[in-house]
Image (cartoon, rainbow, N blue to C red; front, side, top):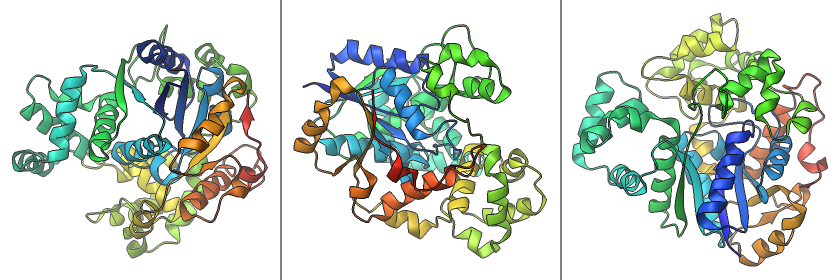
Length: 391
């Protein structure tokens, strides 16, 4: 049985993702695709536009054989932590041969050189990085300029492209973990990751989310599973604002300083912004700077909402992983027994069967918090009542 893995958010699952799956199967001849997908919150520190079961169903209809949940503690980190969690799970399944990912640059040898350079962190690289940070650049920009200096075949723009950033992090994680996964880059086509406008062919997830928010039904043309998505209530970051302000305004500067991701006195900017902000975007804008981009601030705010400190995150990342199954195709049902026979980690199909784990508890809490953001507040403990998605 030949199995390929994909790590994704599918926020939402669109035609570009379906294209990626198709190309993955063509490139490696996989019998099955296993996707490790973010749960109800994403790497940008935002709630996913639709809940994890709706997005899992879309992925299954789009060609994925089985969907696993990437734990909250990894799904809401920067690209490095996101990649680390996904690679660790796929490796621990002990039967996945390939990792497929989208990238703007598909020269695998070149990307591997960049990944190895970042893993080695030579004195020269560290010195250039430190100089760039001293100029006030954000960490991603400072790193991109350091890479372009040491690998002059590509300029800094290449290393700032979102899919390339993730691709390098996947390769770094595979290098550090001595992974046996074979990387398969698939060229990203259509509009760029950060494009806000819908494109004629393949559009970015950001543009599609914007159309959903605006009530523009044209977004349905980009979703292979627009029927089930239309029945679900979309959620947007603004929904978090009252809950987030409640948390921030009851915290002292010192308490904010303990939150995961806060450093270099950033707690003072957050504390001050929480006194004045009128809405979610205003809050992020007041805190963000050239050194601290919006995505990093949004992750910090999300961890503030959950009260996750640096010490708690450190402990969470030391806990054993698991493979939480969100959904599976009926014609791939044999995968469950196959995984159980090979995997080095527990295969979880029912939340009630899983033993106590703080890492798993964070996933359960994420679902309960997410349920507060829907137009009609959903009951808690859905992880225990939702049946496995089988299509």
